[in-house]
Figure 1 (cartoon, rainbow, N blue to C red):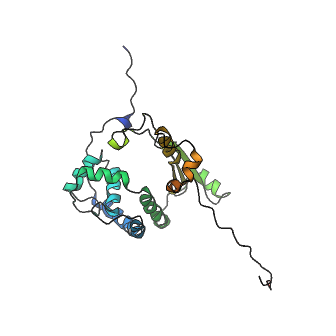
Figure 2: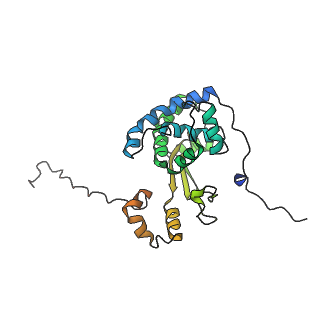
Length: 247
């Protein structure tokens, strides 16, 4: 009998139900994240986003719930939101289409900023709690180096194209590359980098909208991809003599 082709479990349709809410964990997450979310409110408004139902606070709670409680998809997330509180957000009834569209257009840098604002507090919490003994190899390395960082990179999964907004993309289109740098001692991330620029150019190339990557990344509307940086202002030379000459 021919062997069945191997299937990637990540691509299979999930039928699991979300895990049960834990009040202690929910309270801890709320205490950690509320200051970081509040700190992004000014930038949220600078982006032209209005403080409606699907605002920054609710979207952060929704993403955390998806990950923490292993919610299989946006449809089930919308059901949860309509029948129970999600972390610090109260029961909210919205159309599933509205929630799906909000995920597609919500600026990713807001989540990144919340995450990076949270890191200093996580560092403080790690310093205050009882530390586990470090492995001998780590102790030996710390005698010679001030920090021990480890890096890991990966190509993100191909897009599944299950949404109508993605159905025009060709099959097998990758979703970008990701690299994470972690402090080996406290296991906290130092930096998370996602390279989406080449992915965006390949989509534009397939649609016939671009053929030169340098010109594509240099135009103003694509500079937020982070490939082309603005020129830095020249550093003025300092005159350290005791009696600088008049200019």
